[in-house]
Image (cartoon, rainbow, N blue to C red):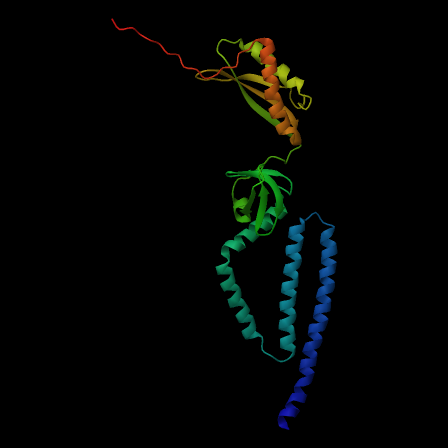
Length: 265
């Protein structure tokens, strides 16, 4: 009988705790919807929005749990201490993952690149397919999928080839030492102008002698194009240079060996 009376006395506390849980969850859902609607109107990356919303939900549920247990008369000191210890242990065990998460947040806030950009990091070059909190997925030109940890991307040098609308194409063109350099330069300019995707702004096609190599005089041609036309222009100019060199009698060198024979007396 005493146990039953004790149970009756504790009922209000549990009912209050249940009320705290219900009201807390309802309020949390309302806050979640408001935040989701607000974030959708911002320029924050969708991955960062999802991460922020998930974090709010997890923290909110933990707070509701602690408040509910406290209302029920259950001491939460040990629970909070347990959460703290567990959090420290998880942070230690997942320190590399936490580094990647921090890197992902930095990437999503600073926007050094976005989905669809072509980037280069170390030996990897490809188009960004997806940016997640932990990692970024890059697709190479030959359709290889490269998964790069965000910690690496946020700490290493990243080359973004898609950031600017225009891009300069640099091509090395070798000619033989017997060819007239000035004629060859004019021929290369003519070849560049034959390609309609080559732009005259911000600079007209530029051709100069780059170096005197062992078997050739190497010219360098620099032309501008739209970013998306880079490889079309690169290969097209090379093909048209061959046509113009044939027309202007400019020789393209090829590797050869001179053999000198001496007759012994």
